[in-house]
Image (cartoon, rainbow over all chains, first blue to last red; front, side, top):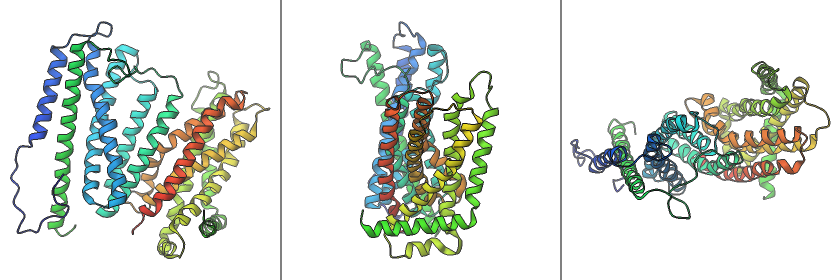
Length: 239
Length: 227
């Protein structure tokens, strides 16, 4: 995140050779390892059987999408309105896109677990509904960005939407919370000690760390792509 | 609120309402759309399976959200011609006043459409008599304020994008979810003959939504414009 805001002059700009993105590789390897550990080296749940294993992907993805991605978008949007720094806009852009991918994973893995356990792919439960609408808001954010050509205007509109979306979340949550909820209550993050066997807890924390690494790697890679795109536009005389 | 802000906002609202009153284009399309939507919804359900009065709140508020979009899109759309928006921005008034004026005119518009749609739902869906109409009118006002605050801001944003009117529902509808949910649930409680206290939590949610989004949108609107 320390890259310069303005593209460097042409003469000083080195030709970037494709190099290995260490953080991203680490994230992918850690994620693969977490999947292997969850699938083969963690005991199945006594009541839910193998279906419970999806929890090692589902819950960390939800955490990353909801708190890391959406949180980052909100913070960067609010800061952009204040500082008007284009790097903040690029972080928000990168975070939205990666968050959308993680939220899609949540919305796919959730129904896969729900079908055998609840007997239905989908219920209009508080958390499911919140996730679905956040997914729509993130998608709307992406489409809005695509519909504005001028970079400063695009950043401005995106920041406005980012801040309003942050305000919307508690309201959607409250309005759907007033309906009865089916979703399992928190198992790890709750006031009393986690009600998981230690092997499951280790697998879960491993998955969570892997997801966080993957998120950081993807956001950084996406941020760099945005930098390169801006530089390209600048060199082509469009920026 | 400083008096000049309020006076300027009223002026902007009066201008918008005068344009709408002279052309009446958006109002009639929104009213006809509402009536069509109310009628189409009726045939989308099996009336022998679900009593039509049970469908009424949902139909009423979903129609409300969609017909609201029709009016909202026009709000900044009319300023596109002849550089009217530039003239409005060059006027020596606070930019918050432009937003509040536009939002005020839109609230009047949405409530006027609702004043036609509501009796239509009552007639067509056989909603029984003896219902407390005053609280339902209050729900309409609360819902209209929240819907218009968010919708007016997004109308301003999308007016300058390539997709324009296609983008407005996409951005605004997720924001209408708490409004439509609360309004429909509260209306259902009241139509079911339950006391006002049963609908209180939904009404509180609506009021909180209005407070937060009217304040946030008024504050953020000048930031959404070119410096």
